Length: 269
Ligand SMILES: C[S@@+](CC[C@H](N)C(=O)[O-])C[C@H]1O[C@@H](n2cnc3c(N)ncnc32)[C@H](O)[C@@H]1O
Image 1 (cartoon, rainbow, N blue to C red):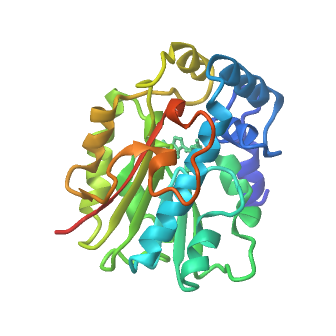
Image 2 (image 1 turned 120 degrees about the vertical axis):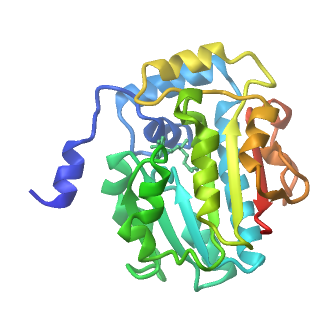
């Protein structure tokens, strides 16, 4: 069997997957009935969720433009998700055509969509890689040969942890995970992070939807999320609900209810 065949055989269609639920909420087609049911259940208990995932995606694009505009030419995107155009490399290359991106996800379905993820006129195997690895093993991510092929850890890197750290439970020590990644980055690097919260509404029901999925959802308050930026300096406006991070237009309806914080920070030493 081909490597892609092997990866495809690991795809579990019996339980909802975060990547596929998110794809469904974004209006994508790479999802199964279990994911659609979970997405609909989420939208029932958290009616702003579809606006929220779009706002999260728009935050990611603004943040990528910001870090590339600040001079960074390499991006390590962990928790990539299924292909949703414009992807990170497409957004980055609107600003600078020589940006390299290593995409990392622990869901084989993301790897199996590699061609779609990488397809654009300028992308090639030397500029991008797709790596099946787990954020919970950050050293394995940093040392992975396909990450090293694209990312030179002696040069500034933008580390993207966009809507993924909430899939790590407290027992999985997410602060230590982020700190391990931070320590691998040289000065001049950036952290772009967004994270789900229940600061704006009771979200016990949303959490319950993920109890049946392949990854649990751990919502954190603002102070708990801000700790992930330890060792970095947050750039203005700091950690805010994603629509309010350097908006490039009027915020979408229900922005005040959106349960995602986002921030961008620089490593200065
Ligand atoms: C909600 S999607 C976010 C996609 C994209 N970063 C965005 O914000 O548009 C979360 C992604 O993180 C991935 N993920 C969850 N836990 C992970 C882990 N422990 N290691 C790597 N990826 C993980 C899921 O498979 C999914 O693709």
